[in-house]
Image (cartoon, rainbow, N blue to C red; front, side, top):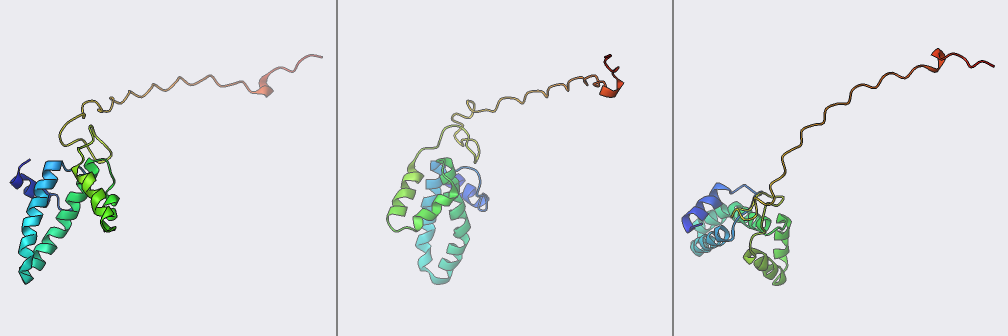
Length: 144
């Protein structure tokens, strides 16, 4: 994925916290966010840019975590100084998990054919109704 396609994907999926984001998509977006961050030194423009980038940044990070097989809740580990940043950085540089996971198919298409769900089996035909059991009262009494 290229730079401009990643930017389009970031803004196009700005509220999409499900799904997966490839490494290239994430890092091109990170470069764009860094370049936009340089503009935040201009007071009013900086606030507008920071506000406009808040949700897309968060959504992209969550989708990247999903691609590596981690829940989006792992984002909160970044709030731990130094260690949290290192853990997230490791997750962000890790390659995609092959095949689909609970957040969707692999965006690279690797392993998706292996994990295709088997076609649903046809429902079994209902068994024929069993003959009604005879009532004990209908049976003749044994002779003594």
